[in-house]
Image (cartoon, rainbow, N blue to C red; front, side):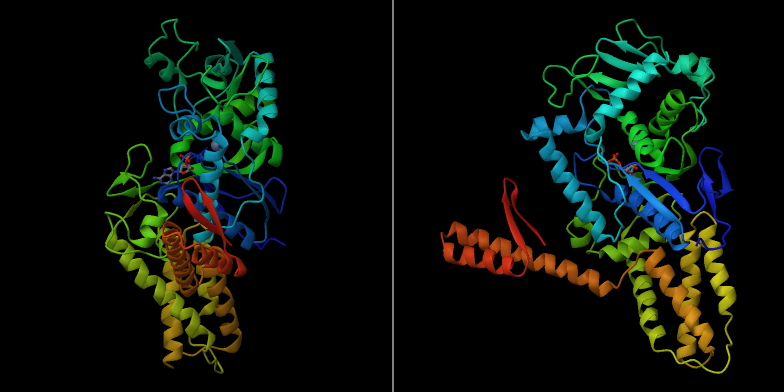
Length: 488
Ligand code: AMP
Ligand code: ZN
């Protein structure tokens, strides 16, 4: 049963906060664009995925049965100003199979998100697993006259789509006529009819390693197409929520809308949600500019920006202190403040467990609960929720000091909602747990180093002993080209 709620969310399509009405009552379909797995995820990526994790958690908390689909982009994401795919390039540079690159960074992505206590999606499809469907929809768009073949590649014809009643520009609020008027006319050398046209299928040059046969010759799919195909396959032609980082709004999501409307005749998504960027020293964290910090570097303190390491839960708490649609800047002072705030909150969880009720309440728990839900119902306003949680911390401490009193029924309600908001909705868990995971990681890495030294010293007995005893504890060492890693 879905709780009676007036959940409102900000829909990028209308630019307004709208009341959430799912297509199928208590079932919610939610698609979030996943990572391009050609390098380690940075904390900016983590913020976006964590924002949608919180949204997923709150919808579940309200009682919705959510099918959460988040893809893995393992082909098709082209480098800016180039015809080369990001994964192919990395594979060429590192002399690895593209699928080795994909596997390495998918594993990293999962490990990182697990550390931050993100719940995995219900379906995690890959672009390479859906080539057939991508070819099919490309054919359909060609048949409808909305795509054309050019030199072994296939492009979506944006002008034709709009001439036939399409609304390319609807999501990013771009005036398409102006866009056409202000861009240079192609010189005839280009494969595209107009600069706005985007690739559905790209011809693979002979040196391109990721390639599949198609009616237009060997090639690979364009990036925007995979999300249309996979969201439709697992959620239907029309579904409730589509999310991603703000930077994906244009052109990626704009193209998704055009492809789906072109192929199926209707708008695919009711609510488009966009999470804002994480900045470092005021600039967008981004792989291409090098202004990044990896989760591992922040946790260990091994980086040039921060004085010390911060645990995953402190980082999660820090991110939850900002609204998902606001920019957030990383700084040492802000993280130190979050560390203190986080411990105060977790201390209060423990204090609450030992609180003694009395005959009546001097505190208004009903009103407090209503405020917490009102904050979350207002487009998932976690900073306001956290402010209310700190009001509760004050109440809890006052009840402990006997300057306030609480009735047993109110105590149960306070306990339920306080913990549900912290654990279920914000996804925060006991610091101690998180701290110990990191310590264990440090110890296993130390043993891996000792084993490496033993092997250099040709002390095979010690090297085997370390490996076997770890295996007996369920920790398996994997020796690879890039050194030794471990799995539980
Ligand atoms: P990518 O792997 O580059 O496709 O990015 C994965 C997700 O991370 C996308 O939803 C991006 O919008 C998001 N993202 C990239 N950089 C940042 C950033 N600095 N802050 C927040 N989200 C980001
Ligand atoms: Zn996408």
